[in-house]
Amino acid sequence: VVTIGHAMVEQGHFAAPDIQQKTDELMESRDKLHSTWDDRQAYLEQLYNQQAFLRDANQLRNYSTSQEAYLKSSDHGDTVDHVEKLIKKHEAFENLLASQEPKLEALKDYGSQLMKEKHFDEDGINATLIDVTNRRANIKDMSSRRKQQLSDSLLYTQFCRDAAEAESWME
Image 1: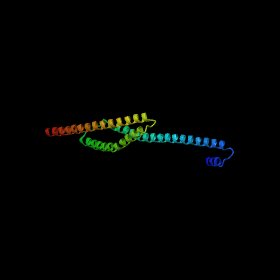
Image 2 (image 1 turned 90 degrees about the vertical axis):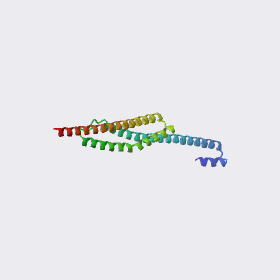
Image 3 (image 1 turned 45 degrees about the vertical axis):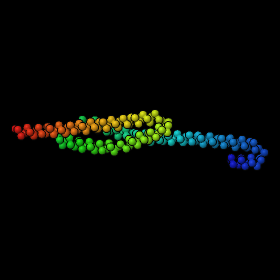
Image 4 (image 1 turned 180 degrees about the horizontal axis):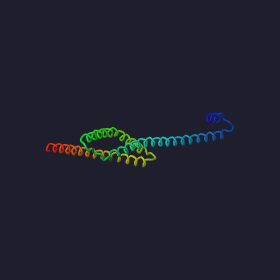
């Protein structure tokens, strides 16, 4: 339509001023439509990025919840064999924990990138990063304590076993 309008104006059509005005109005409307579409597309991309970030953050939160439950266990074993099994289980847990570290780093990088780009939910992203990072640090601390408790329990059960063996020799 715009091309035809320009051609009519160039050919000296008797309604050239009206055609030029309508062509200009059409171009202005088209520019507004494109601008609105570009704004909408940018907003939708930010929503998509937010959902991808929250998906990854929720995955780490879910891992954290189950790992916190494991670490709150009060079972430290009552025999040397039992404690050794618990120590092996805890070593496997620590390996799993270490394997999830890159996911946390990727989440931090992604969140930082979104905040750097002035994402509309910058405050929410920052709060989520702080929450997930703090929970993961807490899990590492709890894991360290659990490892120490199991080590202490192993020493204690070995002592009890050796003491019982010594008593049986004395009888």
